[in-house]
Image 1 (cartoon, rainbow, N blue to C red):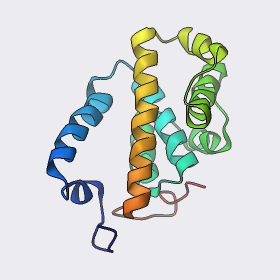
Image 2 (cartoon, one colour; image 1 turned 90 degrees about the vertical axis):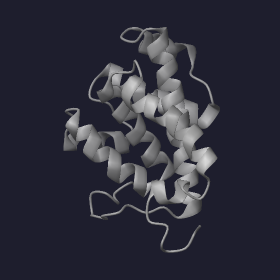
Image 3 (cartoon, rainbow, N blue to C red; image 1 turned 90 degrees about the horizontal axis):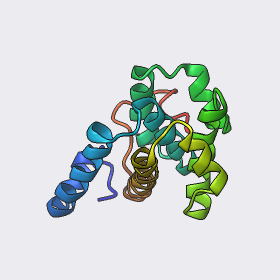
Image 4 (cartoon, helix red, strand yellow; image 1 turned 180 degrees about the vertical axis):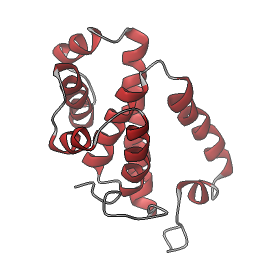
Length: 156
């Protein structure tokens, strides 16, 4: 699986059809049916991709973030651990807390709650967890972006 011909997520997941079916159902929910606002979802995923150095996630979600109105400057801020405003900063801090401690602090939970309801905050936690898992898998299995560019590989 770690050979050079393993060039994207779907061809990698095809090695385990039952797992792919189960996982993709969950992942598709997070992308299409989640209550989390798409812009917030993409900021969180970009922060995960940056922290986990997942070039594949980064390359795909930079494009998706831009489609949700995230600018190049905001993308660069995500890499620095900065938000556009106090709420975006709470999103970034939330990803960092979940990645470091596997939980949100009371302060971050409350700050996210200023704009997100309980379902949205649950979707936030599950989105961060899902994309951290994907980053582990993609990095372990050697999944690389299909069309590598300077921006796509700029996860550091």
